Length: 76
Image 1 (cartoon, rainbow, N blue to C red):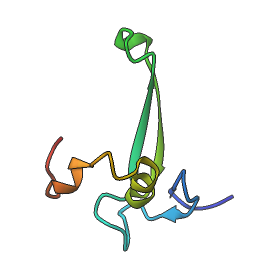
Image 2 (cartoon, rainbow, N blue to C red):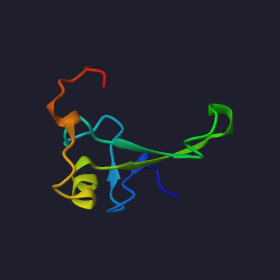
Image 3 (spheres, rainbow, N blue to C red):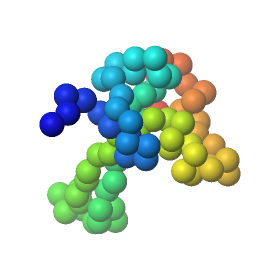
Image 4 (spheres, helix red, strand yellow):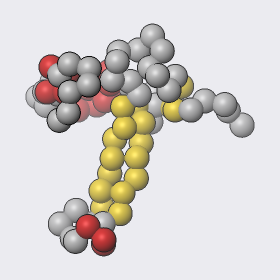
């Protein structure tokens, strides 16, 4: 059993809880919400963790991430 706190769902590499040497947004959490158009009490959600760079590689250049323009501590 691993003592890692987070593992990237794309590259499978571990990440430090505070980002370590990674960009300040790592680890990122991807939240999947099922039944999104239903009432909140009927929705289901699950989190996956990833490196920001791994996520960007998956979604491609056509989908800009405005969170990269935010300062540390800003809210979306």
